[in-house]
Image (cartoon, rainbow, N blue to C red; front, side):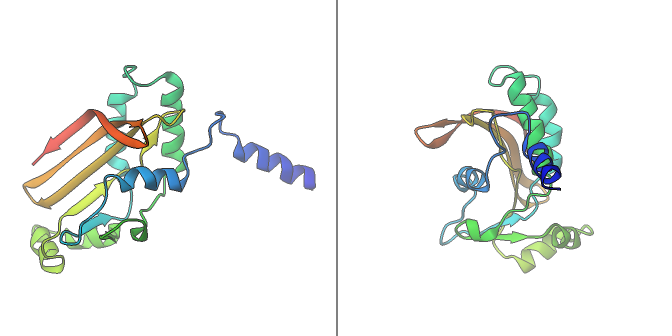
Length: 179
């Protein structure tokens, strides 16, 4: 019995990389650099990480060897699978509230969605972000962010950042959109 448990632990902890999946601390350290409000501007963040867009934009960067290796691409896929149900915790960001996916769907159930949204959340915009996907040595990452304030008032992109002197610096972008 002890041998079976030991083998199960070894199998489930091995992911093919010497590097473990990014920790919540690493995810929130990066995201905290970009997701925050101020004392006068509060942010409403979709609680569920935006998987749909990062999956769509994945096809663009999974073939670009400018910044990433084949090992990095495999590590990205592993992170996408391993953090599939990730949800943002509002207590980890300053002046940020989270909103559930079911509440967003209820608010935007018809053409009156933005009117309903602004009545319930005056002077706020809706923000969504993916989990950051780190390369194997965690010196680069890919991070999708979007903000929408109305039907034709929004923008988003999947960006590449490089870690320099403890800060994530913008390097490049995939799949930018504006409405």
